[in-house]
Length: 77
Image (cartoon, rainbow, N blue to C red; front, side, top):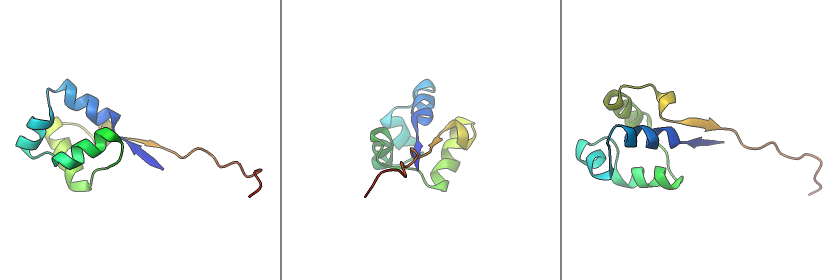
């Protein structure tokens, strides 16, 4: 299971947010922001709450669930 934050990154860019502004306004930590950009991190519920308030959106506007690909049960271990 993976959560993708491409929607969040696009929304931040659309609304004129950069790393400096995100840090200045305390939306999310700088390390968290870069982890999301690199696909190695995620958000906790408090960060989601702050982002939704600041961006006037819903959680689904920030992230997308991407299911794992189906396992091939016919493979022999």
